[in-house]
Image 1 (cartoon, rainbow, N blue to C red):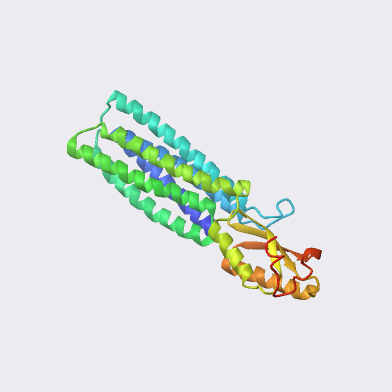
Image 2: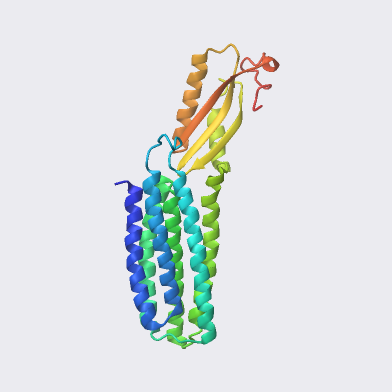
Length: 302
């Protein structure tokens, strides 16, 4: 089984267990913050299921219908997960405001904060595993899932702290206030996730640092060509795509020019994992007929 798929299934098992535990304790104690955490974990479970299927599909090789592979299924997954987080946050805020107005008290804060701290510890371990595998495989779906669980770590710890303070002070209004604070924190994380997942869907270029690696790699083989232009980059799932036009002297043998392109492609794949490179060979026109190396200023980056 693919490592990403195996790790995504771990998240499903973890979230399912936590939902049951939080629901039981939330109903018993009457704590809106614990119930909001159960809602949060339910959204996490839905996100984990989406992540599981997206990494399973994205791991398929390219086919006739998807010649560039299935990587964007992970990006779609990230957008859907961000929307789920937004929905969970709105539900939490609504329920907390109702509880704040009604002034309902928590029945047993002691059991509540113990369960919340346990939940935070479990999610910390699982999210760390997810993040490690996500970084290793550059998986947007697993990064989104890891973010879900990491926000759950903070929110569970925050709810636990709020219930602990209620146990000490007897101020029950702290319960819905903590829930509202957590919801706004989750909204901020969801906005960041939505941006990261949506950009590849509209073919936003690679990051400046990645483009710098690409241009530096090309420069290693100069002199050898006259210049390059029309550099374009994009990302699909964990796959990076780079294409450019490389200009050579008109009298250079095609095999020599092709060998230089091969070397650049190999070097680029070493520097940036999961990268597909397409280089279009171009010959200098009449304006740079004297481009013969090393005098190549007229052809540079047209």
